[in-house]
Length: 236
Image 1 (tube, rainbow, N blue to C red):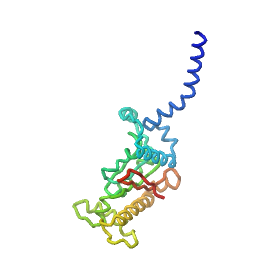
Image 2: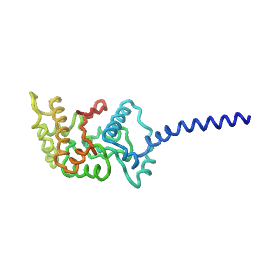
Image 3: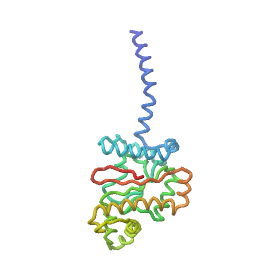
């Protein structure tokens, strides 16, 4: 009996030693981002995490996130690894479609997912000061803001908001008829162009972000969310 107990103890010791890295990884993967995890992050790794998260979302196999524990873990500080510029649309909550928890993402939302000085300043904060390694400009299919801009909609302050999409409308070339919200292909072409032009503006209008991009400290990528499938396609 004594020999069996010693053998059992030795076996358990070997088992726990082998499992320790896995247990630590699982704890980190299901918990909030830490300063060390953010410091080790690269733009490429950040992009991979978002892609993996969307794959879990599409498969219906999200992580078991303890949000209350994450609230406690992030009470004294936050270390998000990515910043998302997305549309106001209620169908595309970034944290859900990327299967991320509290403290993982900075999210800036506005109808039409464009950037102005306020949004650019927010992105400077999220990257230069708060350590985010990736900026994702994410449009989506069936975008109401893009449709409104294509139709020249006029409504209070929304008129000036939609005007931010006019540059994308002017930039879309080709034989699209009609050039209004009734033409789904045209609306999607404007949505794609709007994402591209927004990405360009991030580096053109912000000296801080342009310097970080040139130094490979951050990357800027475009994405399109399909409201009918839940899939995020990252653009070249």
